[in-house]
Length: 510
Image 1 (cartoon, rainbow, N blue to C red):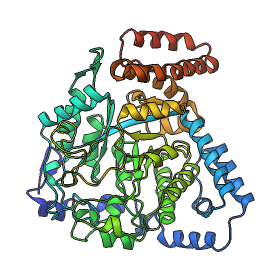
Image 2: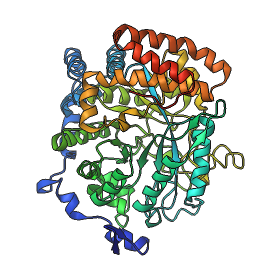
Image 3: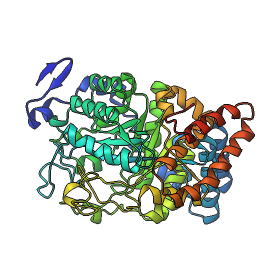
Image 4: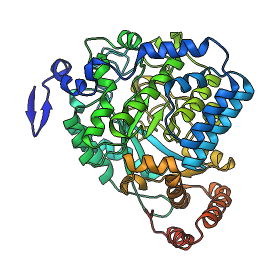
């Protein structure tokens, strides 16, 4: 290992495995060696909550407090919500989750696309197609020219403005490589097919391995959006079983303290997640709540998003089919509803791992973001004409929802939901503590409603078919009428920006 310009360089994968973790950056956030995800407490809380049927009056009190304060619930309250199985009371919870979502985020869903940069990996996760030693996987790392080809499709043909860039953990895809790809994505301009208007990616979120503070500062400086790391499972014995001790990912404490290092580095938008199907779903939800509360305790800022990936088939492994902890669709929706009530302010992401029917049902269960027209093969977007829709040997897992962005937009419009391509909050500095307060009070939803209207107008004019435009026009008119009603003095300014967008101006926002 050497150090160049403040970043460590590793000669090979073994050197990386032996020297990447910095113990001091773990110990700082686990004072006295005590972990903020208290497994024994989780088991105690769940055992107590399961010992008797939940008291409806207590559940309703918890729901009311969540709606009123929009603050993260104590773990014992979250544990009580997880035990509800009475259909009527579950419906009360779902309705409350939908009300909270609308109060905080309004009736909009943010869309994005995954963009896989590499599938080289030094880890041995038993359920993952990317793991080292999986001979079924075809390995590659995108060059910058190949990355531009991917952006040409995502931004220039489909119309996405926001991507989640995904990286395997390997010294060849170091922090310098991640930073270079982010600069490349931001710097590559396209033209919309219908109007010739400028098009491009305006926000790059990142899903990558946990990094040290020094590396995270580099990503902060190149304009990273949200930094996303999924814990996979918070149950330490299961985690250690699935992630070999010889791998970097085998270090549970390094992974769980990643977001503390993010905050220290100035990356104040972070995205939690658990991979449901690896262990007891109720345990995972309580651990997510504990993780959110510890970030709030240290920094006053909780997670910008929580994701809900479900275990899916992958190349070279049978774990996704044989795990005893797989969950059905009804349980999946219960997880979303309970999490929306437990962490009311957070964004909630449901991806194309889910079948269309499942994702449609999540629209009124607290979800705020989804992907569409997704391809998770390495160079899958620009090579889509050369390969099948899904090629197991080129991707981490299999997708279940292959709908196009336009199909998803039309479905949501039929439900009165506006599609948002907005990235303004990040570029206006509404991140971290600023956005947390705005979300809890509902102010951010107002800004985002306006920006959603403007970006939706852009996308319809630049990318949508005439049939989709005709279908969505009434929804846009309804949204504008709503803005005029609750912001009458500001509405003329909004209307001026909207009319400018209709005439060809782009990237106008508040």
